[in-house]
Length: 243
Image (cartoon, rainbow, N blue to C red; front, top):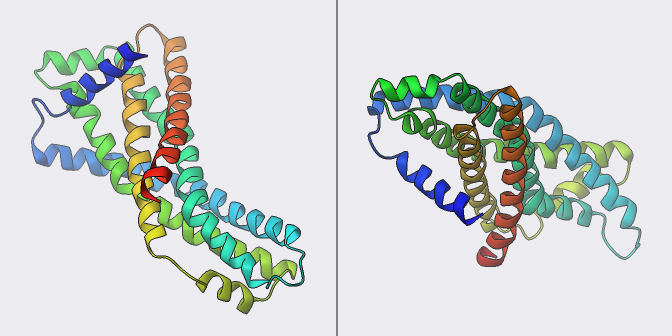
């Protein structure tokens, strides 16, 4: 594990040596942002909406005390969504979709010697291939998390009102109650950290793939597994340090 960690640090350091021109990096970053962000909107929207709906229904099921106002349901949906569900669950979903795509793409380029061809041409392959992916992830992950927050709260609203568990006014009162703006900042900080972990770990696993097609699949699986473990550990550490 220490060997992998040291190799990972050296890999990240190599991204900033012999870099390409800003124009090339900008164009590649935009392309990667489309692949990572735009192509992930649908799955993020579906997951966030139903997580908010299910959370609202389950809270309403357990909140059967007549002395607790029904607006508490909206309050709890908001807090759970902003602090944990939107940044963490969204990142875990993206670790499966984006992480496996990054690792599989780089692994395929490695075993087909496309990476070696870039090195022969005098191009820093790590900087050219990996740095735009990391920068793009840092740009689009917070946007996807914000979208997830909105849709999750909206999903709770629709599920709560349609099921008759609470009125629209009660739900809105709950999500407005004792709002702490720092929680949104905390969620965005988590999204930046998770974006870096997913993109860098997946790139590392894919870039150092060797063998054939079987090894590419193994690298993708390992990238997703390691990314999810890193997300959970970072989630705990950030909660302890920032809250």
